Length: 507
Image (cartoon, rainbow, N blue to C red; front, side, top):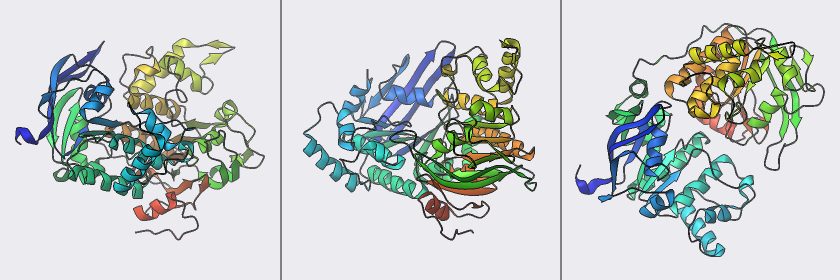
C-alpha cells in the first residue's frame, strides 16, 4: 500500500475515561475507495474511535492524517468540512418536517429550498435511493428515513463515509439496494468505514477489517477470506457458543390474540389491524418487520401499556385486555421493549433500582409497603453475574452502561423472573456476537422450561435461529403464521414487505 493510496491513517489513538481505557494505542489505515469494517464486541471501543474521527471526542494521545495531512477535528463541523460524514445508528430527524427541511438543518449554508429539493432528487436517484424532498419524515418507513440520512451525507461529497449498524432497520431487499449504493460510492473513490454486528454482511461487502477487543486492536483480516465464526471468535477472544435447544413439542396455548386492533398512539405511530395469533408453552414465535410497522405498538398492547377491547387478548384462557402492566406481570406476562434507555430502564436510576422497577412483585422485593433493598441488590447482582454485564456494580446508573451491556441487563431482568409468557422486542439490538448468543440461549432455555416466547426482531438471522414459527408485521397487519424451518430469505422479505395471503416458499 503506497502513501497515495491511503485516505485516513490512525496512529496510537488513545482515549481514557475515569476507570476505563476506551482506546489504547489504536492504529490502522483506510485506503481510498475501500470499504473497511470496524469490528468488536460491546465495550471494545468502536464508538469512541469513530467519535474521535468525527470530531465528537478529542484523543488523549495519538494522531490522524487525512489525505496525507494532519487531521484533528475539534468538532463534527470541522470533520465534515474536511470530507468526513457519518450516518448514525439512531436517526436524528424531525418527524414533523419534510425531507428537504431536515436535510437543510444539517447544512452550514443551505441553498434555496427549491434548489435543495432539486439536488436531493438528483443525488438520491443517482445512487439508487429515490426520495421525495417534500414528504413529511413522520410518514416515511425506517428504510426511507435512512435514505434521508445517507443523502444528507452524500450532498457533502464526502471522502470518508462512516456507517454505524446501517442495515438494522432494513428488509433483505433494502439491504441489497444499500449495498449497491455503497459499492457505487466505493468505485467512485469514496472510502467507507462500516460498523456492524452482522458478520455475513461484512463478508459480502467489506474489503478489509480491523478488530478491537477491550480498546485495543487485536487483529486484521480480509472478510471474504474469513468465516463469520472466525471473525466472531477474534472479537471475543474465545470459542463462540452456538445456541441450541432440545426441540420439545409445544404445550397448551398460553397467549392468544383474537383480531387485536388498536389506534395509533401518536400521530406518527402505527395502528394495529386485526392481529390474530397463538403462542404455546415451550414455543418461540418469531415476528419480523422493518421498524415502524407496529412492533412497538404490539408490544405495548401485550404489556398493558395500551389496553384493548374485551376478547382481543387472552392469557391462559383469561381475558386480560383491560389489565395494565402490573396486573399482567402478576399473572406472568412479561415484556422487554426495544428502547432500553428510557423505556426498559430509567437512565439515572441504579441497576438495583431498575431491577426493582419490574421485579418488585415476582421477586418479593417489597413487603408491607417497604422496599427490601438487600434482596433487590442481590437480584441485580444475580442478573449481572449470569448475563456477564460489564459494570463496576449494581449501584451504577443505567446510563453508565454501554448499550449492549444495558441490553443484557434488561433482558436478563425479565428472563430471571421466570415468566409464563415473555415478549421481547429487538432482544439483541446492538450487542456483540457473544452477548447475542447468551441472550438467545437464555430465551431458548426459557422455552425449554415451558415459557411461551415471542421474539420481535429486525434481525432475520436471529429469528431463524430461535423461532419455531414465524410471521411478519407490515403497516400494523400480521402475515400468516408459518413454520420457520426452511423459509427462504426471499419469502421472508416479501412477508415483511406486506405480501399477505401469499403462498410462502420453503427450501
